[in-house]
Length: 444
Image (tube, rainbow, N blue to C red; front, side, top):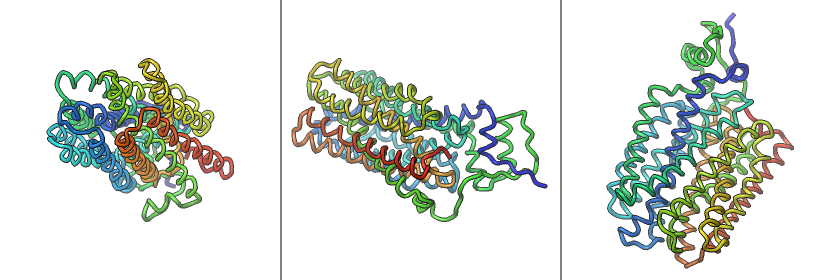
């Protein structure tokens, strides 16, 4: 009789191995690249605006075009991974991103920069959904949420490091160097992925892939385990065929999907409003370019620190009880940026509070989405949640540009900016109600 190995149970019964840590580290590196790219346009904006002699609000096109590209990548590229596999889609997104980021260094106008930012975003768009899905699928359920948010700490760390790097590079070498480094690193990382990144083991089982390939990965996780040569590999969860996007609304998931989309939309709206315009608003208020960039980098860095602090609680108490207070903290911190006056230390403190809430909140929301969807639609579900979030990311810088064009002051801009974080908190309450009512928001 052919032996049957259920992948989730098999992983749950083993200790974490070196290959699982390797997958975590590689996916975190990909998240750091996404974080660096997502924020570097905000870091270089003041220098480009000064060099090209354009009005700050005219730069909105450059902010938004990259986010539109990311939106298309999330909605169109991420679902491919549920058919073709996580590994090669992730590698392809890194290569495309690296090429177009290098080309951005040669931009000569807002139009050319906007086009290249669009292509860069489209190249990278599907990558993060795959990194989240890959990490979730390699770890046991007792620590899956924690490892997923730990991996995504790469995003704020990449964004924060990019700010400090930009503050050092721009005065010495000019803004193109930021894009040059942002292109070289992902191309090099793609080569590392080809050598070191395995395919998602759960995806292989769901797709009924070669038993030999699955057995090889299982032996790397536990070299001492006996794997029958003719074993059959399965994942004990829901599966279906057909268009994967349709299934994110199936099996009672409609309300949960919509609420997750609200969280992602509001969360990423605030993140990109802050990272796109905070440096320019502070610079216009009289602070130096370096100080303005450091305040924005601190926002991302505090988000990474807060994520590390709350991460161990996620698998013990659940993601949603942790997520609600994070978004309340975000609303308070964002509003405070506008109302603490001209003392840089207080602005820095408010920025850290905002980052601790909104950035860590987004990291935890990623784990919520990854847990909510089964393997066969996980990349699609996470990708579309990120895609809806990217719509918020487009709205954030656009609204910021409109507010600047209307000559709104810092209190008005960041006072209004606190409202989406409150909507995210309310959506989390809705998810908690669904969880208590039907038990649908649980690790899969």
